[in-house]
Amino acid sequence: MSNIVCERDTDCRRKSLRAPSSIFVPNTNSGVQLPWYTIYPTIQEFSSEIGAHTHEQWLRSQGTDDAVSLYLHIPFCRSMCWYCGFPTSITRRDTLITNYLAMLREEIRLVAEQVPQALSVGDVHFGGGSPTIMPSADFLSLMELLRGRFAIERGATIAVEVDPRTFTTDMAEALERTGVNRASVGVQSFDPVVQKAINRIQSEAQVMTAVENLRLYGVRRINFDLMFGLPNQTVQSCLESAMLAIAMRPDRLAVFGYSHVPSFRKNQRLIDTAALPDIAARAEQASAMADTLVAAGYLQIGLDHFALPDDELAIAQRAGRLRRNSLGYSAETCSTVIGLGASAIGRCGDGYVQNDLTQSCYNRHIASGRLAISRGYRLTTEDRVRAAIIEQLMCYLEADISAICTAQGFDQTHLVSSAKQLEILAEDGIVEFDNGLVRVRHERRSALRHVAAAFDAYLGRQPI
Image (cartoon, rainbow, N blue to C red; front, side, top):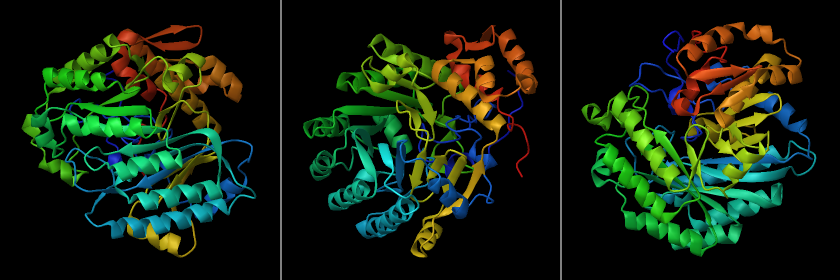
């Protein structure tokens, strides 16, 4: 692995959407900094040559028979978590939120007008920030607008991220009324010592109350986010957090490693670097949490997710329908993601687009009656081949290189540099080969991103 050249991602997590779905989280403790590969190519390759006009063309060519995913970015929180790597504004006033939502509603109208008839929607995801801090009446009107502008399928997944510290019964009732059926609850750690070190104080009782209210109001599919590698975190505190989470029996859990990048995120400068666990401790924490969740009946999905056997992710993995996109792991088959809101990333058939990163620029574009796309990327055939290989690896820990190349009409001899790097990984006991099939050894799952990086044609190239 030491022969793989990896460079610092200059965009880093400050320009991403969602933790599991964030595009980059460099592991600054390991000396090797790799993308999470939720999309490929990564946002480092995005260019301002792809703008609003290109996105309009891609939307107009979007087939109305194929369902799409909607992602709505709500970049507001009541307080700043010091570990956070997301583009978030801290506000105590609802006025800033409602003004932003007015622009978001206008963007929805602009996007919907690009297509001749309402697009079919297979899933909707509200991310942030903390989407549930918006007034419940605004959430109701936003969902009403979405249903008026798009054809949201019966049985569509409608998911929202929840901060248990600010979650109210009024919002729980609004979720029920609008058909929300999945919630992702931010936990990170139940250890009060760790919570103090990251400025996120929330009790076990607050989390339990949020879970109970969600289930009471019909949101029965629940995810938890947990983290390791946080300041003052130990193997024991990781195990205790995992056990407390298991007792509440969420359908799935995401377990992420904290990445300390204070040069990109000023709020992370408030974390005591000396309190961060070293590489060996991080690995021990991750392994202990994984073992605990698997022993409790959860199946490990891809790199960092755990799901009960009857959860959609587990079912999709068994059926070969598991996907990985800008939202992270998904059980949906929607190949198109329409991103709405400041910094949101979308994926159309021909490539990726991203809205302006700052709320002020985003607002200015939308108020002028134009889409807020600031950059994007047009996919080549080789990009599609490499993306398919990386996605299969990240979802199934294996990829049929020959079959993917054949399906795309691509000469796999162009992957010769990848083959050289895979040989190194094979020597390290991380991968094995079998008639064109590359397989990551399950006991070396933690090196999955290193294997994916072998197929990244851009990694190590100096940014333009």
